[in-house]
Amino acid sequence: MSVLAIMMIMIGIVTVMLVVNWAYLVLVSRHTLRLSDTLALTAVSQLLDEEVLEDSGLFNQGDDITAAEDEILMPGTGFLDRNNAASGPTLRPDASQVFVVPGRIEDASQPVGPTDFNKTPAANEPYNSLRVEIYRDPDPLGVKPVQLMFRGQGSPETAKITSASLATLDSRVVGFYPTSTVNAPLAPLAIESNAWFNVRPAIGTDTALPDGRLELDFTLQSTSGMGPVNSALISMNNLPLNTAAVENQILFGIGPADVNGMFGPLTAASPLAFDSTQVSPAGDLNDIADAFDDIANSNNPRRAFPIYDSATNPLSIVGFIGARVIEADAANGGFGPRLRVRLQPEFIVHSTVETQFELPAATTVPENLYIHKIRLTR
Image (cartoon, rainbow, N blue to C red; front, side, top):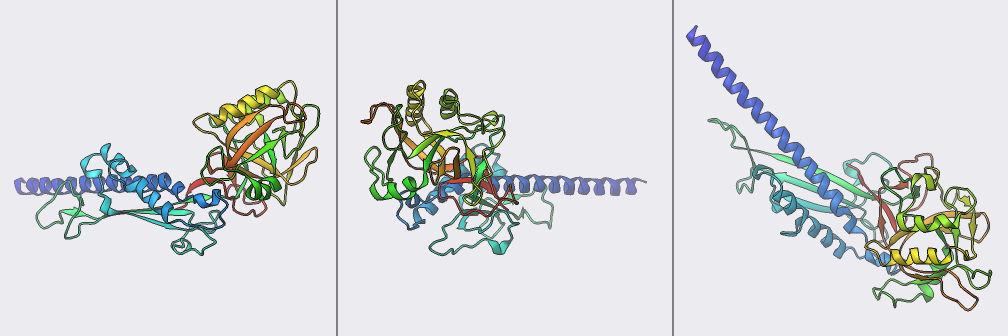
């Protein structure tokens, strides 16, 4: 009986050791996967190419790749070191065990397999995805490998833990879907597509913020209906335009009630019509101009703007651009008081963006140069 009892105790001890080791390895493995997910999601926006905002027509992503690597691996300030500072010693991979690989996913709406990640895109197809791989491998040099909690005679002293995560910038924008807790950064000022895509690059200025991004003034007609115009105030919810509500929409973004749940889906092939005015509203003009100017001087002067091809009422919205508000005023433009908002290109990454991935029945849309949603694609 004593021999049997000793044998059972020994088997029990070994079983407990195996269970503890297995549970511990599962814990480390899940932490490592969460970490690679977080690193990929944190750094993928660094791949956005500044040359796009400068209308250069060329992609040069060497600096963007470096920025993504630094976001993760920069000693002291990189997200890896920040994670390690808040994690236990056994949950801290070394920088030499983390690999950052840029690439491209052609269609984020489809399941992504190993062969869908293109690491050598063509010149006209910039990187839009970031793969983060973590290898905690007990190689002969053994840089911070994962040690087993119980190490018996004859068993390996370390375990191999790996993970890989792929984050993608999804840019096929078809609308904005604000939630009860997150407003959409969509301004109720629609701008003429020709003025943005053609006039601004051709004759725009770079004076307010000399940074290579050409600016252009977007104006309404004066309160008397006179003067040049290349924009329009629009109603976001298909109701008659209420200019008194525009100020709050500019300052705080668009909530579900402002857009009847969603602004869209819409594309150039399937536009949507909204009530609008191209005349500066006399009663609310100063408040609207002040709201845009407050945004220009805030910590986040970026907004998405609807675009239209031709001026009609109702106005036909065909897409979106992202822009930085430089300044705004309601001064006399030679024809009387009018709204003027100066904009320059800017990237926007936001959770309320509605993309083709979420609306598989939507018409196929081209990539949006300015607006993106980050997805964990694998």
